[in-house]
Length: 215
Length: 215
DNA sequence: TCCCGTCTAGACCGCTTGGTCTAGACCACT
DNA sequence: AGTGGTCTAGACCAAGCGGTCTAGACGGGA
Image 1 (tube, each protein chain N blue to C red):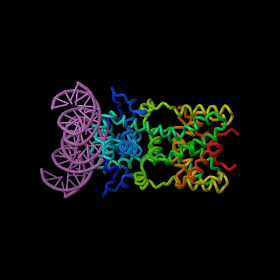
Image 2 (cartoon, protein in one colour):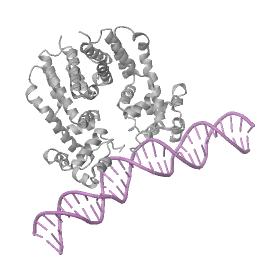
Image 3 (cartoon, rainbow over the protein chains, first blue to last red):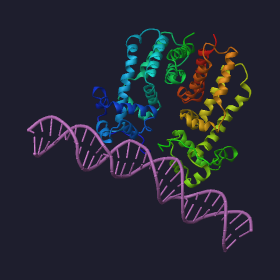
Image 4 (cartoon, rainbow over the protein chains, first blue to last red):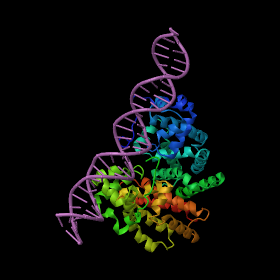
């Protein structure tokens, strides 16, 4: 698959895979195997044959239900995204309009950490998407239009306008900086004890706060 | 190459490839093609056949001179590392013992940025090594024992002892934090103009300085 | 001129990849 | 019982991979 690194099936309705009708919900062993494989390797490197072997599903069934490798990936990501939203939903609904930017950031950290601790594979999946090439990401984000980054970016603009962040820094720089730190949270908070990890995560927010808050 | 993801040739002296006797120095087209390919894709994904096609070298010659794919990779990295050292050498020799940690950090940033601007492919190569799996990195670092991270970590300890960094943060956290920011410098300083990039890089150091310096 | 070591070209090997295709199992409806 | 649609199993496919191997080109010493 070198010459044709990534391609999408025509005449196949991927969106039918998402939501309640997600066929992956009916094949828990396939879901497990897919999460294992896609958490371990990036999309191109992940082996469909290995997933099939591990899950016991036949190739015919997989292609019948999911169309192709990308269909399986989308169906899996749909489930992961739902799970992730469940961790962030309580936060999104009430806190996002208060004036306490760094307090919110700590809560985002906490939710990220808890999501990470619940199943490290899912965290890997979330991070790994951002490591894929642009074309692939765009294809994926066509189906998951949550646009986290834009919401986050707007929130930072708000925090700047309300005087919480030093205006000498371009908002985009601040947004990217925080995004990078969040994406690498697993490398920063590595010690086993969950409490210790949370403490470290809060220290990371402290560093960011001292770094960018207005003097 | 799925079942045997990474293997090293026995009875072959890789170290003979490094230094002055590096055979890659005699094949500039091969060097170019290797940098192109290994900067584009990670080790496993990089295609030896593509490198050969681009450079016009035959497979027989390659295996005669370099032993295997890993030998070619090592020979190329040897040249890259030499180049990188040439950017950091002036810095290492005089500045590393002064008491101005953040000043030094700014100079490290500047050198990193200049190295990046000189040839973006080389910067990609440097960053990409850290994305490879542990086993591969260890194999590579066996041949390039510069141990940047340990030197850097010690330097941070010194800066803490001399009261430049807030001691509430664990030194390892600070080291990893800075390391992550440096590794993602290309994502932070993206705007085309070199001066603007340097300005952004300095702002990033400012953020770090405000973030971790003792109050 | 012959010989031998070095080097080159590229056919070939075994293996893995994602994807296709066919035969048939199973089931519901007529 | 017959028919048609859905689903499954897995043989098979072309392409790409890193690596091996052989035939021969080339050049210096005897």
